[in-house]
Amino acid sequence: MVVVSAVEKGRQWRNEEEEDAAERGLSRVELRRAKAISRRLLFLAVGWIETVDPFFFFLDFSPFSLLRTSLRSLSNIFTDSDLIADRNNSIMAVVSPLAKYKLVFLGDQSVGKTSIITRFMYDKFDTTYQATIGIDFLSKTMYLEDRTVRLQLWDTAGQERFRSLIPSYIRDSSVAVIVYDVANRQSFLNTAKWIEEVRTERGTDVIIVLVGNKTDLVDKRQVSIEEGDGKAREFGVMFIETSAKAGFNIKPLFRKIASALPGMETLSSTKQEDMVDVNLKSSGNASQSEQQGGGCAC
Image (cartoon, rainbow, N blue to C red; front, side, top):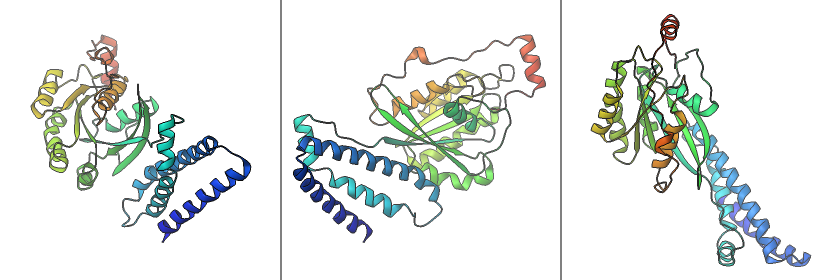
């Protein structure tokens, strides 16, 4: 009933707008411009609802579902003949909502999944470690060379007690970012299980990126870059090493992901010179202070 009434109300508004425009002597071009503004507002409203809606995953029925459907129905009212006329006359471009992609971050506890996201979102590093409880969600818009995309970042807990929650978040993901700690060999060995779990839920219809984090821990490194690259080739996934603490390769990581997203084949944002191979040489003072401080908390 809500959707039907919204559609009927929208058609009524459209007829009233055209009659009012005729009375005030507005041209069809001016009327189309007004409708374009209405479309933009509706798309913004739908985008906001779709961003908030995932927080109601634990409910059988989301309170936003009817409102979202109603707004989409209203937005369709402003299309059809108006958009065709706009396209033919080159008066204005068709407005479309942002493309959204779900990125789920996976890996053992304390490998730095949250730190990578925090560095990307806010360009900062928190030295105080706090384990993620359950699932955390953040969203960020990326402005690329020829388009804009919205990345929905799902930060999963690495603790065993939360493993049962993770498959449901993998099922509709576009990208799976599997993180391991280069100073923790067991976390590297466990990446095979994470990749298998992603393939079980999504098959080959997902982009998988293997990320070796904490490259700033030079003296504590247990996994070489050659081993990481070899495992990525073995499973047919993308590979990069990062340091959330130092901020190395964080932006290139997400540009690399963006260039591999569906419809981004022609994107040239990810250039070889942008990729930084972190191979830091330790100095005596730096190594000593890092050992005293317990190393990287990322």
